[in-house]
Image 1 (cartoon, rainbow, N blue to C red):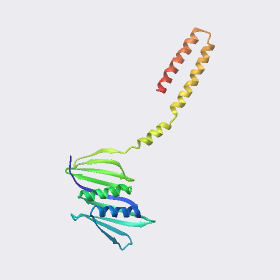
Image 2: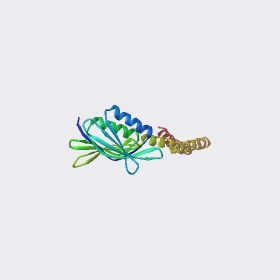
Image 3: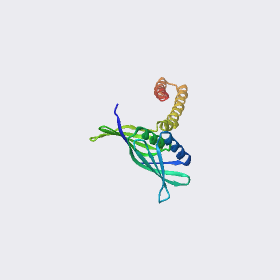
Image 4: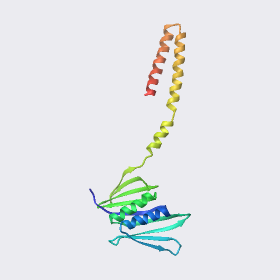
Amino acid sequence: MAQRLATEYVKATFQMTELQLNQFMHSAECCHMHIIVKVLDSGGQEIVLEDESGEEVHFPLESKNGLYFCELSCRLVNPRMTNLVRKLFVACKGEGIVNRIYQGFTMMYYYENGSVRMISEVTPSRSKLVYEYKHTAGELQRVYQLDDVEQEISLLYQDINYWLDERNKAETSEQIARIDDKLRQGAAKWFALEA
């Protein structure tokens, strides 16, 4: 299995409540991260996390209506720091691109609302789509709600009833043969639609 060299967040954005921010700070402390909170000239805040190896991440936060908005661009190497940021990003329903960098290739994860929507494998010579989210449940629900087939079966049922009534009224063997042929065709189509 390939060893991950680094993880990059490219213009990743997310928002969090004050409770989520406090939980994140607590998680960082539990992971033995050094936390520095800076107040910026613009009135915003910046949280800086630093691990024992010296790797650090800067989270610029803008507060608006009780929410903290963050646009994050960083490169992480330390697995503990990477895991902590990943958990925050997913919990806060982040959006953006996360590159997981390996020797000779990069896996690009495209996030929307905290969920992976697409994964691409990128090498110097090519890019290959590995995964793309498809709203299968929603598509199946839409197909399930379509009632075109049921309507066609209902019309076919009425048609067959009509030809059965006509058969009962038929007086010649040619009329009966022609009606029987119509009934055979209708029955075959009916069974195909029911399947």
